[in-house]
Length: 482
View: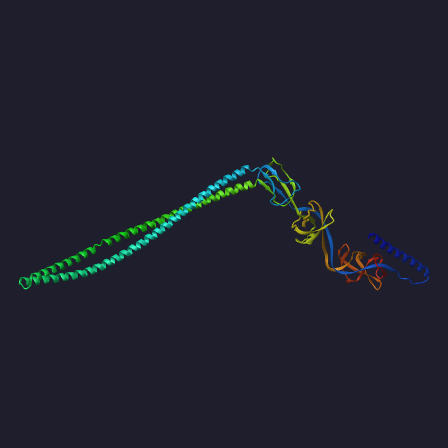
């Protein structure tokens, strides 16, 4: 490319030289004429465009790991086993080393024994609660039965009392009838006696009248006796005594229910206390297991082991890192940028990244844009790069390539077209084979194109070679690029 460019420059200079010789000869031949021949200056042109001026920025930074984790033992102890060495690739949770855990295992056994004892106490308390609940159920059943018995005896007593009253009413009626019959029998006896004394009836008739009076009196006496017996009925008294007894039984059953409820409350309190004991014992077991687990050192991140400190038989410290793990599945490139470059970077934007010593270009994603200066007037920008094959290593030098819009919606001319004349920025356009000088104002210089304002139109041609030899109105000959 450079050789081709040199050929173009030599060709251009040759044309100028030939034209100068020709002009000299013409001057000698026509020295007697008054009008000189006009010179055509060879030039090359390019079109004016319209749009945005952009440029690529190359910012150099350093590759850093996405994560770098120091794994510190959770407790001190003697190393019994070390399972990793530098360069090993580990995963989260992978066992890295084991410390002596004899005392911790014994502590776990003691706490487990205490837990079993507490659980046994809880079972006993729960059994006592069930017994108390069963006792209440039995007491409620007894109370229900006693209440039923009271109601039954009350019904029987009411029935007996009604029967007694009914019987007494009947006996009174019987007494009246018996008294009436006895009175009639006595009157008949008196009449028969008078008749017998007068000899008007036989002895047999008189004796029959006597027997009739005796029978009527006996019947009356029997009915009166029945009334006395009915008034003092022993069965009624027995029922009343049974009712009193049933009511006493009901009261006792009700008291038993209250006692059972108190027993349930006490049993529930015992269960709650036992449950608290079990929970406390379980906490003891969990704590002992945690202390036992602390004797196993595990990876807290995935990545490559870059540092191992310790050996079997040595003491691990709860203050010093045992291993350092660097995750390089994803790496980051960190660069420092000027304040006016911050607008180029937006979190989540994709950028190109070149890593020194590697031909392959990588895609990065902007992950961090610092909100404050690092102290030197620069701002930190970080971009994340996927690194599944671990080709990129922390510490490598990398370059971020970003396109920056220097100017938008503006007139663009080749940078070489803009020259300085009398302290002004100008370009030359071509009109009918004549160079036309036009003043422009440069908005922003770029490597290949420059953004300007002025009386220029899109697709208009401007001189990009030979412009330094031109003046306004010079004749030109447009040369095609070889």
